[in-house]
Length: 125
Image (tube, rainbow, N blue to C red):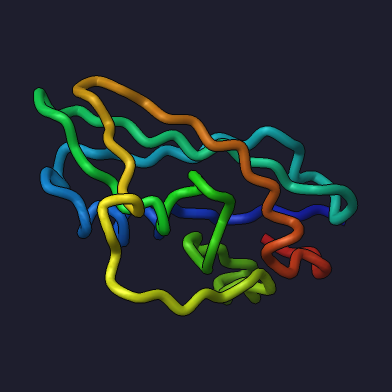
């Protein structure tokens, strides 16, 4: 059976809202594994890039800097949300240690295994 997933960087909308120069940070998702079967893990790469001429602070909670720590992706199957099965975290207000600095032009790459975070048991598009 075939699966085709629509995964968007919900994380980008959330973390960008928490940066000093939100419009200048982009998020891109690259698939690192095949989606032609319901078997096997799904690996993606999340790339965050600062397009601004000055450094930007990014809240790490909505990236994969410390591993995925919440439902930061918008994944659908046949138009319906795919269930998030990963951990949920309660947090206090962020401190300086919760931010990561992106230098001008810098990109950060995160490799993420989504199969342990979302329910991909059913086939679909």
